[in-house]
Length: 235
Image (cartoon, rainbow, N blue to C red; front, side, top):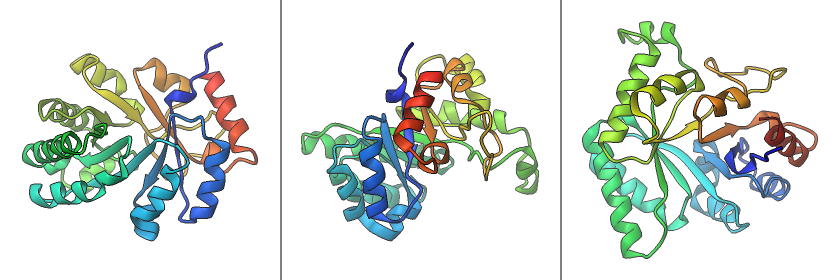
């Protein structure tokens, strides 16, 4: 039986650094830990550094989205944290994405550090076709995801964050050119919470995901380490 822990990114959904550090100790063998906007806004770069100093690989999910120069400056300001992964919104457009890629490459080369994996965020898993209608966007979610996936590839990004519902069509259209990171993962008996386009871990891996982002099924359990181990073995 294979162990897929290296494919699991655990979402640390707390602003409490001490709680995050305690949790990190129990899931230290996960592929990476995801720290998002909520954690970063409360704890800042120093909070990220504390988690990183445990040896954990950090997926810094800040979803940068602004004019090209602003995004480049913001990304440059966090690269000293040496994240394993970081995210930018693909809807920021080609110029923004190219500028982000350029600043990361330049900074990492100059400072002799490993370049983080740059992931483009396509369509948030909290959105569905009905949300698109309310936003005045014509077409289906999967059509937009494919367009944005092609933009990610064209602008030289390493990968894409997208729902597992679109994994098959992305792989069909682009093959294996992009690393695919999939949030919205739930166990068969788990709660959906605020996600709409969700699947189980095994289905996501079979459909082409390279990494799975899993939060509450692990972090909200009585024994996060055991939950991580269990999920990694049943994929």
